[in-house]
Length: 365
Image 1 (tube, rainbow, N blue to C red):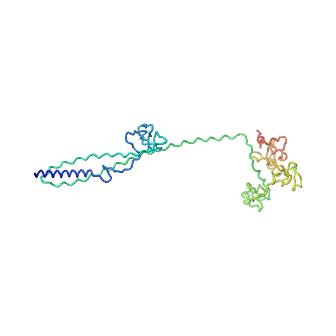
Image 2: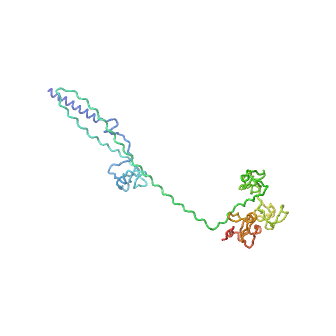
Image 3: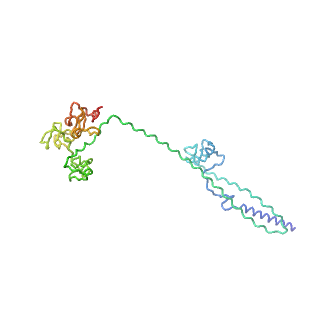
């Protein structure tokens, strides 16, 4: 009877020891399950479980279904994680479908079962206290963090813009001269003083203007806004026309009271003429018409030759006239009696309306 009681006590003690050992081995730290943390950061790429197929470069060049996209991680799907421009590798639609709720993380695999404890030794005749429980095993290390997904491929570079067309070649035919202001007044002789930048920084008198050619004067050639360098007044006096050579008559107060021809005007400088320099209201002294003749043609640029008094005494070609503005030409602006200075030939006057007949020192077309 006593032996049966001792055996029963030993069985109870052995069972309690086995229970304590098993509980100690299965005891887990806080917030851990089977040695793995409960909350881990979500992976970058939603790796779908089978039967989701692989595709693209990382999936053996496989193809997705017609309504699925192949992501840059080589998985097929229909959400933005697969079809968004920054996530899609191929079979990319224009409007990806909205993402479904993310699937739950896969359950961790259970740890391997612990080996059974060694069988207890045969009990002694008297019960002995149980040995101390072994120390708990160290917690298993956490699983390695998932590797980051490969970087998304850069967007394709934009195609280069088409080359700009080359400008058309210039036309060989000369263009008619554009209107320009009359040429500047000739440089006055001494004792007219120099001024401004071209005149050593000199100053003009109180009633004079310093022109951009660094000469002092009171006419528009000196005081007009486009011609004045310094000491510029607000209302410059009108500039006189170029002095025509004889036999152009004088008129008015400065010309002994003489009269001009019926089609001419007497300017405020007492010379007869038909242009705006003579007939304009601000320039006309007497015999002023209501519709003055048009202004002379604009000054052509070099290399067209000058002639006469304003051109260093140069000569025009045999079929040209030297105008009172010292330019060569064949129209009325050069050959008409009121406009011609020398080499005047009435029988070569060409139409003013045809600018191609103006030679300006080159052959006519």
